[in-house]
Structure formats: structure tokens, C-alpha cells
Amino acid sequence: MASKDFTTTILVDKTPTEVFDAINNVRGWWPGEIEGGSKKLNDEFTYQYEEIHYSKQKLIEVVPDKRVVWLVTDSRLNFIKDKSEWTGSKISFEITKKENKTQIRFTHQGLIPENECFDSCSSAWTKIINNSLHGFITVGKGLDDLQ
Image 1 (spheres, rainbow, N blue to C red):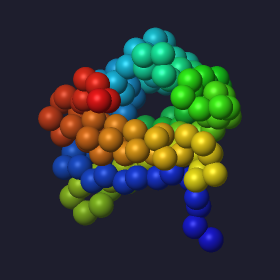
Image 2 (image 1 turned 180 degrees about the vertical axis):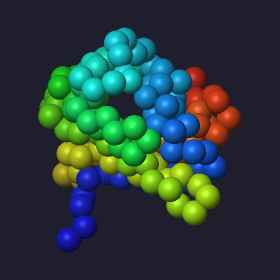
Image 3 (image 1 turned 120 degrees about the horizontal axis):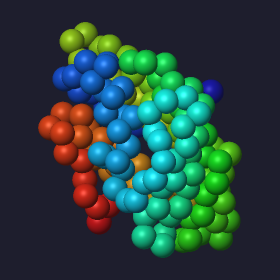
Image 4 (image 1 turned 90 degrees about the vertical axis):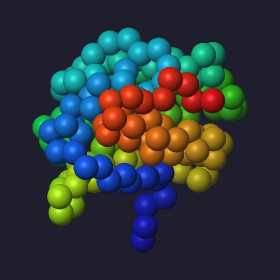
């Protein structure tokens, strides 16, 4: 049975090391205000986008050039009824070689179709991963805003 967790995959013409380093430079590709560390195991950072979205992430798995996993330890999504819907979910980046390119498989475990924020959150993640992270990895510039 296929997972219902939101996932998207991108392919880039960069090495796994370049991809890993870019993912861990969250300020370069996730538009919003970010405070704290985002590079090594047990680092914690907060993300704030206007008054719409706040979340706190802890790096719970960091395997150089292969995998990064964040645990969302706190969240406040001000556009839905259950504002803490992300709390306890996990966000993962799987990095693999595909011929002469590198694939990133992004999954937000716990972001499922039954969630109130699924449509808007999956749409935002698609834009962030497919446009901003992709652009940051390939040309060194992510999106400045989600609009």
C-alpha cells in the first residue's frame, strides 16, 4: 500500500555533497525567517512566515550526502482550526545518485490528505522544493517569497 504522506522528488545535476550542503542551508531556500542551527544532529531551528506559519524543527537524523530528517517539535499554523497540526510530524530528504545526477526525495511524514492543511501545505511544499530548493541547488538562489 502506498504511503499517503506528501512527497515530491527532484533531480539535479549536482553531487550528493552539494545537495546535502544546500539542504542544510535552510535560509537559502525556505522563504521566511529562520533562527537557530540547521546543519548537524540535534540542531534546532524555528521557521516563521509572516503571521501565517510558525514551526520548530529538530534535526534527528543527519547522514552526510544521504539523508536529513527533521522532527517538528512545535507548530502554529494560523490558517487552520488545529493550529498544531504539524507538531510531531517528520520532514525528510533522501539523497541518492541516479546515473550522473542526484535525486532528492522530499517527504513530509504526517502531512496526509485527511489533514486540514494538506492542500495548501502540499502546494507550498511543491513550490518550495521544486522551485526554491531546486533553484538554490542548481543556480545558488532560492525564492525570496512564497507569493
